[in-house]
Length: 304
Image (cartoon, rainbow, N blue to C red; front, top):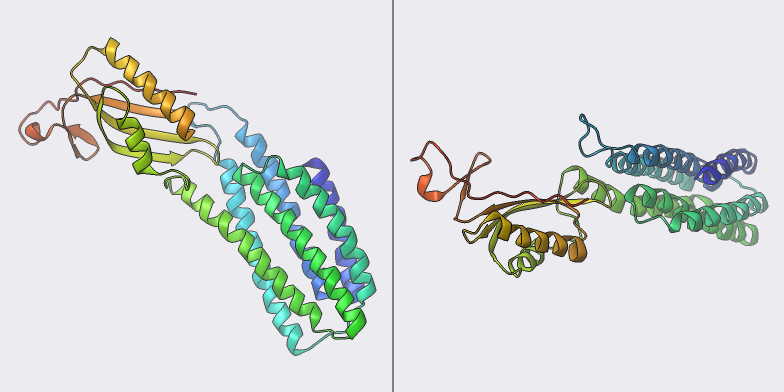
């Protein structure tokens, strides 16, 4: 990421100067886009350090969502830049400006090489939503810069300057498309939605298939970060000693970790049916009648 930051900053300067000299909106938009890429890489770089910090009494889950916040900010910045490029491109379509296609092509060719190398470096770590947002920045840049080369060639051979703003519109559309998925995923994590590849019904069925489990209810699954998931639920079992229920708990945690990649669990065992009243579990027959709610046997399992 340090190499990527240095190379991107250098390319921002080159494309901005070249865009001014060539009067190319496509190159200037590439420069603006690469500014956002530099900031995106910088945010991701800082977020990686925050994510590595251990949990403490004030942040009991640690800083796992630092990367999620960085990814959301990166995507929001990209959307703003795409809208600006789109507005400028429409203006250029109505009032074409002469460009220097040879300079466009030379600078864009250097950009394809640089962005392609950076995207390849980030590909291996792109499972994390934070680093995936940085990868999408660079992969999108590689494609859009290749489009600038094609546009420069088109202008060189046809003399049609409207190709430059038309390409800018395509670049803006590409930026919006690549950003939309990141925004959806980060918002789902921040709103504690069910992870996109988790099926509640499938997980419940798997847990209920474990020997000794009667049913699973009050099931919640959410993401702590882009690669860390948590689960909390109530599990009804027979009225058995804690020593016997410990075996069921171990089987449930193994199932969740091995088959559903859920490593942080809080599982509450009960031996009778329950209802929910403002977060407190109360047996239906005692709701409104007993001053002492009966919870059955409770075990919480945490696997790290």
